[in-house]
Image (tube, rainbow, N blue to C red; front, side, top):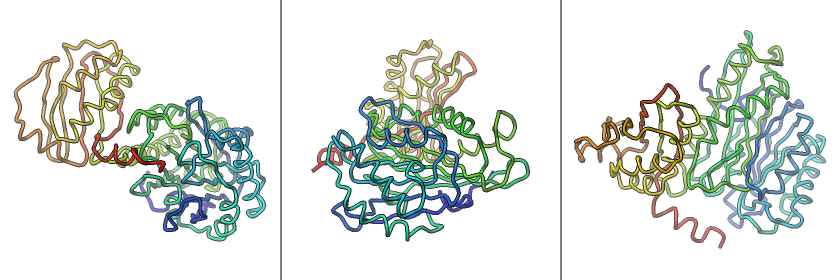
Length: 403
């Protein structure tokens, strides 16, 4: 497996585009994206568990209930959530695209992201769809930009891998900067691949993957109403269709995880106002569940996140977060270390502090990417979670997000 260029257009048969249609007042920001497969594709999705869900999620669930889709349309700037006519608008988006693109309206995945509870006018979308379709190309850049809200960078990646002697490709784009604490599954991820795989196995691969990828990311502890991860697999690589578990399925899952893990790190590192990507690696846990619980508790701690912003090696906040996590751990066995490109330093052994250089620790914690290494010394299980530091700018961004 190797990383390649192309994003969601790296796989055979996929094109994408993005335009400014007028949902956003700022005409320099694209706000409508399209991903298209020249061949009808197998489709799978996972969705937010928030009881308040965006209308596009309801429509997408219905559309891909048969396990197939051919296009993805997504607008930014308005979440189409908590609107009386939200379902109607989402369905119209699919219908309008269907007419222009020549695909069945039921073969469209629809998504929205932006402000919750604000009416969404179909007119700018209707006016923008012709240019959106005409702009389809082998570049995923415009689509990646068009789904952004408070993101500061576009998020895309792609890989090539082999299944049964056939080269397959997989790529994805994502948006996500704030309101990030997925439980699936405002975060959106769209993945495309030319691998041939059945609907059942694609859904299985995705549902299992998010447990160790997107469900292990947290920026601010808020689970969005619009979280969605969707995968299209059009089979154009020509491999034998994956219909069950085995070596081919394992290779596909590895490739999928390479995409999702890469995007997880990008989402966490681009958290609203963030200056640092935080990666919490928990090892030595008695069970996977304990490792997951501990890693997420630490990465979600506001006090710990604030300490990382200040490059303060306040390891007591790590133990505090472990202690209230609810995980069954022996606190007298816990070891904690911080690591970055500037080096590594042990700050806690057997649940107690050890002497260390504050100057060296500050140097380590001043880097852009920080690892928090926690060894529970109670078993063989491990887990990794991703987050970011908590800065003044997070409040600034969200204090007037709507207005």
